[in-house]
Length: 610
Image (cartoon, rainbow, N blue to C red; front, top):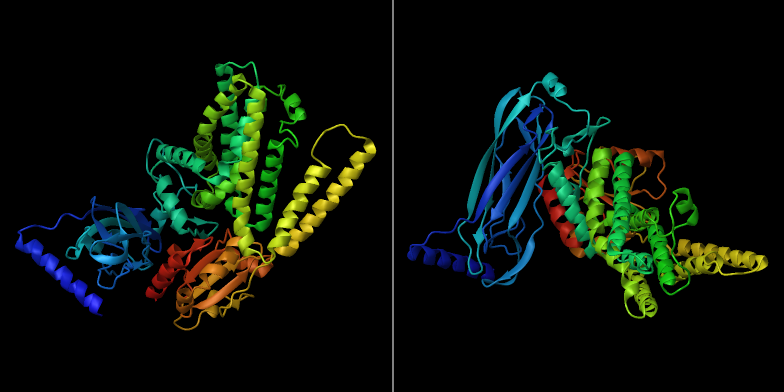
């Protein structure tokens, strides 16, 4: 209480100082707002997007300030009998320390974005209307805060008759205009409907949507830059030794010849990513969520460890001769470079999809087959661009003095690097599974079985070939048995209601919102949620205000699948918030692991919506 009173006094003195010196407060931010779509029929849903550009050197408080004397930032709309306002999606805050307060404060800086879905009520009459809103905030600098302020905005909207709205509909779920144009459908994909069902978007997917809405040319450039940025992630580390190993040992090549082969190698990587986009659009699922399964991690780690073994001389990675013969090329030919590019692209794509989850999920949910393939092709070009240089000059490494020893040293160095990458991917699983020893023994058994039983072409008798295959098979089976026994989900101690065949309305207590957790026993982030987030005392305290429902999707039966389809669940874990009426608070939907701080903010917003 004393601290609060002290800072109120501080703010009053600061404001008095500004007035006494005849100074005016600076312009804290500039505001722009837009509506998508600008035309909709009664009963439809629109979305308001607001962008605040905060002046350099200044900041505004977040929507949930960490100090009780600070004024929160709020986006509000003028009440109207024509609209129903949904939950405002606030940006992720930054935590900074300033001279006027001893602890970190939750603030917004730079350019920040707010969004809110708004439903036009069915009784709204056709015609032109104006949607009015206001962003209220308090600006501060390093030393003091200014008086609370607000920015108002008005957005024109045309409510269409039902017939006109139907005529204006486009067949494709989402369409990108050419040359930087807007989304030609003019519709917010969050409100689009496929097969009569409302499309559900997560917060990551809504941010990805902002990229797609700015036009095809902008989206291609953005996906290219995102591909470049993926080179900073561990997903691409295995490509480095593969690239050096494949191109480094080829002698007698000019730089031009190496460049042409490297271009085919780059094209192979880009085609793999294009396939990721096409498959996501066709399947309507988020392929990146494969990476959340311990089994998928085990497969990826096994491949990485096998590549590490090849760096130490256990075997040599070559393009299969049968493939090269079919395409009429040689091992050093262009087809070989293309196929190697496709191979490394397949290695990267699933892992990268887990990182760019919002982009993959949006393409999947919108069903953008052709455009998805084109966009992810651009991303593959961006990701593979550094390897164009690496492949070009790797072919010249053999011209260095004592190139043979040099390449052996480089390969062993990358072998150790790959072991580190394998540890990077497997460590999170070790923290979440029940029996870490048998998980590691299982990986060892599978890798050893493959190396000892099936990989390697040294001369050997027929009897020994059969012997090593039998031993290798037994070791692989034993490894798989150990892996299966080590993977178990840890139950949560919260008062969950486990879904059988209830409806959302039945699950909800009177006046109480519902929190639904779709999980699976094989899902590592699900276990991490139980371990870190659901065990947090602050989260438990807020969850006590909800009806808690867990839906086991490990081996879903027909009723569970129908329940999953009702909420358009495409990955594990999916976290949903329902109002007491049973209506989903769509902009709070999350997929994947959520840290306690982020869940606290979502829980508070869900409680405020009652």
